[in-house]
Structures are given as structure tokens and as C-alpha cells.
Image (tube, rainbow, N blue to C red; front, side, top):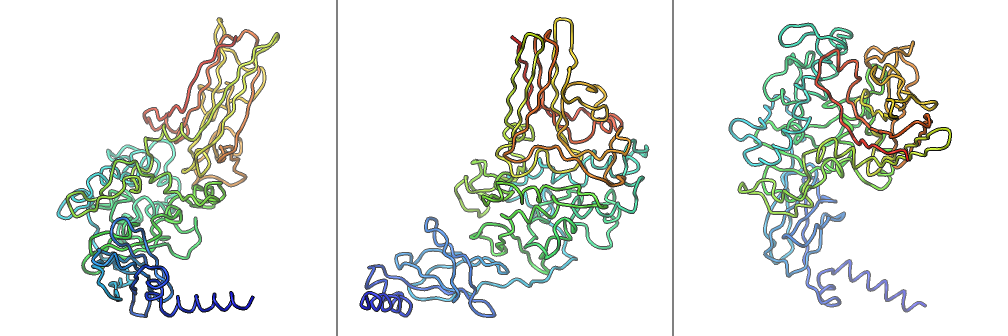
Length: 499
């Protein structure tokens, strides 16, 4: 038994002390070493990309990797957090690479790059990405008329805002919104205290340059520090730096950060307790979901490659890549309705008996990493069931009914609410989160990979049944009061004959 152990020790020792010669002698493969070094010594965990099809090497504790000799002459890129991405050509001998270190200082006087206009704007090189961003809610986060109708006291024309108004109802809470809705606004800017006063690039809300100046998140409690206050920024004093998830970006002002593929990035704005109310809970929902248990981050769905873009900067120095590995900036691929339809399975059964007719509905959330609906606390779904006879609509004999505060036009109809209503103590109407007096929030939303079932009993006169699932971003009463266009999104609607 001693001889095999001794042989193994000799084998391991030779491999450690003479890796290149050992590989050539035993494995028939000639290798050489690259060492990635910083001001304090070796950089462990740096990513080295060689050529286009060799994959990514990761440096060891000595900052080194072993590279087969047949790759001599190939281009390489080195990416390490806290450093600019570095490029070069592989020589025929062991070589040291010294990537340029970032300053580590955030200069708040930095002027944001405009996403669409002026010299060196983002869309000049990244036209397709800028278009996707422009069509997303991020580009309108500080200027959406519905957001401003909830935030402001008066409209642009001077007319008083009708219905809920944060500025009128709770003016001391106004400053909390800018951290997420206009995160680029700096200290001393009037836009921090009143988001209607944002100017310039800040009017684009969550814009390209802000997102790509993020190098990580701060060691703060998720949900209690919001937006820019939770994110770690690195704005340059001179020159430029852009952070992103690509490890071999060709520009010499690019830097890699792993945060761009982590849900913590999204948590800065999509998890938030404000004035004691858990208004945004998407991140904590994801943490408890089967998707998180499988290692799926938010970006897996909301920045899912669409297979169309293979170059982030075509004709501007960008590299042709596999389109199925390139993140989309649509955030809601295919639109809200399609995402809801892909995330909710439904089944309806109508059973007509001798004395009555029973309608059963089953819903299940699938392919999703959070509850449905998620996001702003007022978002909800309405499952609406209408039974009809030759004489007209029939009311249910038993089963859940839709209350008047959900929608007066549906009051008493068969159906259920899937949401988190902040009800007034008399349970006759909903309240905005900034006025809610507290209590238990009833959460009836769909949970990932869980199903819910309901049933209703109607008269035997039923001839057909219409079942609808409707999504609404705000409560109907506020939509009517503020004279917004119909915001209903019909997830599905079907009519079943009661035979």
C-alpha cells in the first residue's frame, strides 16, 4: 500500500513544482503561465478570456493560470473587479499582466452621459439597447403621468390633482421617491425634495449611465435603504469608466462587476419598506421562491436574451457574440400581458347537475420567481366569473364575491381578488400606503409553483359561463377619479357552455 501513496505524492509534487515541464512530459501538452498582478500583489479570481472559443480561465491564489502553448499569439482580456479590463497578446513565455486599477472614489460632480442626445451619447454605439431601454418603464420612472398624478399636488397646467396625492397628503415623505425614480439626482439638487423639479438627464429617471456606474451594493439592510442609497457608485474625476457583466469588453474604459447578474442589484429599488409599510416586496419574494433555490437570478427572466442582438456596438468596435448569451434590456420581454400569460396556468370546469351548476377555477403561478402580481403594492388581479342564462346574468348561490371597493361595477359578482389591499378600518375603501394606519396586510396573491382553487354554485338555469382574469396596476376608484385611460390587462378570458 505504501508504493501507490508514494507515487501519488511524487506525481503531485512534480505537478506543483514544474507544471509546464510536467504537462509536456506526462500529458504531452506544453503550457506556460500568466500572472495577473495588482499593486498589493497577485489578484485571485480574475477572469482571463483567450480568443473566442477557449472559455474563461480564473486565476488562482498566486494570480496565475496555465495556458496551452498552442494559444501563443492569441488575444487575451483580463477582468477583475476594481480594475479596468486589460487586453494584450500572448507571448511564448510566462508573462505578467498589470491591469489598471480604478480610483475607488466616487466623484459626485461627474456629469451624466445623455442616453440619446449630444456628443458621445449612449445610443451612438448602442442603438438597439438604447431603444429597448427607451421603451421600458425605467426611462419614464420620473416622468410617467400616472406616477406624477400620485406624487404631485398639481398638474403641469396648474389644476389640482384629484384623488390620492403624496405631496398633499404627506409632504414630508416626498423626498423618498427620488432615490429610485430619479437616482441620478445629486445632493443639493431641488429634484431630491421635489421630483417634479428634476432637469436634464435626470428626467430620464433610471438611465443608461447611472446603471453602468454601479460597481456593487453597500453593506446596508435591503429594503430600508433605497435606490442610489443602497448602490455603490464609481463616477470618475477624469476620463470615463463603465461597469457591466462582459469580461472581455474591448473599450479601455470598461470594468467588470458581478453585480450585474445578481438579484441584489434589483433589490435596491424592488424591495422597500416606507413609512412602516412593506410597499415593494419582489426581492424578498424571490429569496423564498423555488427559482432562488435553483440559483436563478432576476436577470434570468427580466434580461433574458431575445436571440436577436449579437453585438452591443455594431460597427463601433463591438465584438460579434452568441445572441443567446446577450442580455436584453426590455425588462418585460413581449410585454406585460405576454409575461402574465406565460406565468399563470388556468383551468376551468363547469359541471351542470340536476339542481344546480358548479363552476371551479384553478390558477397556478409557473415560470416565475416572485408572487403574481408583484411590485407596487396596489397592483392586483381580479378573477371574475359570470354565469348567464337565456334570461340574463345569474348571481352565485354561494362562493366568494367581489366587494364594492374592488370595483363597483363588479360588486356582488362571483370572483376573487389577488392582491394586497390596504383597507380602511371600516373595510369600505382602500388607502394609499402613506396614509395607512397599520394592521395586518392580507396577501392573497399567487405564489410561485403553488396553485389555488375556488368554486361557485349557480342556478341550474346556467347556459354558459365567462371566466376572466384581469390585471390592474391601480385601484379602479383612483383610475376613475384621475380620469386615466382603461388600464385593464386581460390575462385570459374564455366562455364555456354549460352542457
